[in-house]
Image (spheres, rainbow, N blue to C red):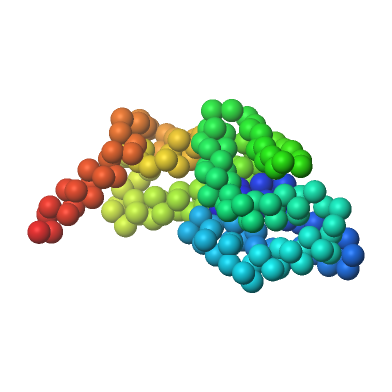
Length: 194
C-alpha cells in the first residue's frame, strides 16, 4: 500500500499540481488505488467524475490522463498485481521499473530498494517491538532465542530478515515453509478448538 501511494502513484499524477487552477491533485483517488481491498470503489461514478475533473484541470498531464485510462479500463487490479510483483522483485534486486502503457503513451518509474525500505521502516520497527515485548512478557532475553521461523511473504524482504537477525544474533533463521506454515498452524489451531 505504501509503495503504491507514496511511490508508484506518482507515475499517474499523484503529487502534481493542477495546471489550470494551481491546486494539488486530490490524493483520495490514489488512496483507493493503493488499497487492494478498496479497488472496486475506484470505478464508482463519483471517483470517475473527480478524475475527469483532474483531466480537465490538467489537460497536458500525461500522468493524469494515464490514471484516467487505468480507471476507465478497469485496470486497477492489474496495477495492484504489478505493484505486488515490484515489492517481491525488490527482495532480489536493488531496483525495479514499473511501466504503464496506454495506446497513446508509455510511462515508467524506477523504484529503488532503499526507497521501499524507507517506506516500510516504521512497520518493520513495530514488528521488532512486538517481538521484543513478547520476549519480555515470556521472561526470555534476545540472546536466548536459538531459532526464528520465518513465516509469510514479508519475511522475504531483506530489511525484515536483517532486523530480525540483528536483534536476535544467536538465532538461526528457518526458511523451510514460509507460506505453508501459516496454513498448517491455522489447521492445528482449528483442530484443537473442535
